[in-house]
Length: 188
Image (cartoon, rainbow, N blue to C red; front, side, top):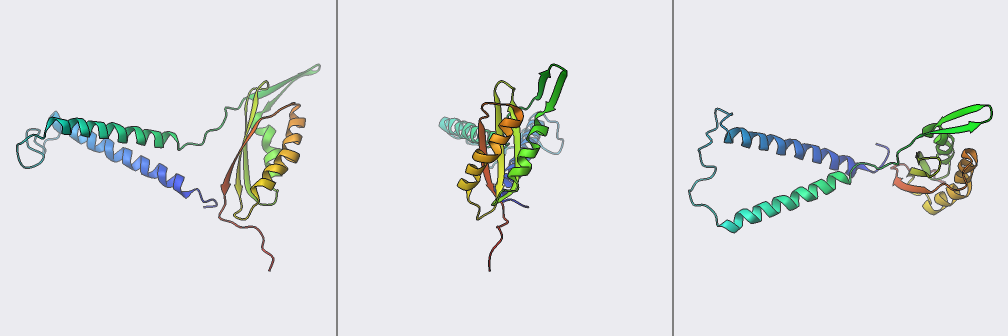
């Protein structure tokens, strides 16, 4: 692994495993209730004893289940990386029309940013329309990289070149920094 975003991968794995286990247990419970699983008797007690718990216990269990379910749903929704939707850009000229995929437009930008000191890898997505473009940049920075200097260099050098190449007056940008496990060159 080149980055330290291992918790996100672990989160997704645990969510998938938990979901599979819960679906299996729910399927077994429903199958047992309707008598579809022959070895299990739907009339048998789950625990010894015949006394039913007080009524408030059922409400507490249901409330706790709803809270846990909503927390798990919130956790699941927070997992994927959100990128703006990209479009194919069209430039009309007197001699014809030029189409440019948004991913192609940002390739030189990401190649340039990846060479900046302290940057291990760069990924960018140019989203939105030509009238309202948005640039989302995800940088994998080295452990000892200067994030402020990287951001300043992108704003001063890389972004103006991209705006000029795309003939845009403004290009809003978001940057997400991730840390790589690799460190920069050391002087000994």
